[in-house]
Image 1 (cartoon, one colour):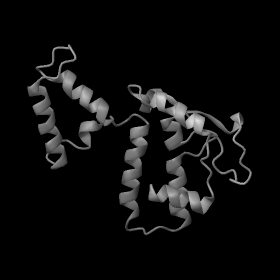
Image 2 (cartoon, one colour):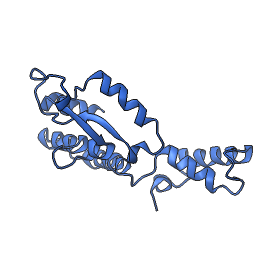
Image 3 (cartoon, helix red, strand yellow):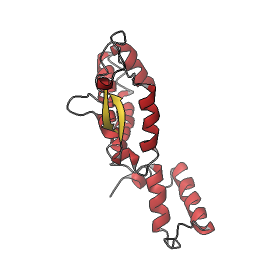
Image 4 (cartoon, rainbow, N blue to C red):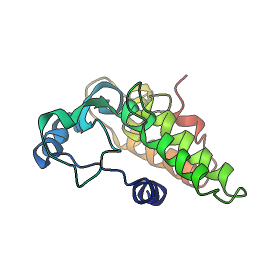
Length: 166
């Protein structure tokens, strides 16, 4: 988030969208698999000066999170803007590989290559031997889930591989 903020300040990026559209974005955001299946109101041209900004209907469009994060034909994407910023300021080369690893993770998540926590949780429950397709999460399923989460937190589990789609 800090790098995006720095890119915004350095390149004078403008992410203003009418508040009504921000509120409308909450509806699709709550749907299952919204990260890959829904579209959100987002500004078409983030490089337009704030002073020139008029909040009219032609300044925003519907985009998937993948398009917002990774870009599309006529929109650069947030991660490419961050990379442009890193190149512009000649960022510390010793820290760059780690930053690029994080950006790739976010890029892959937006592209649907990595499961969200909600997707992974649903998959864990529905694949559990005790699950009966009745929407009931038994104590054993809940316990096994917590134990799997603990393994991941303690780096004993399959992270990030656990979240990568096969």
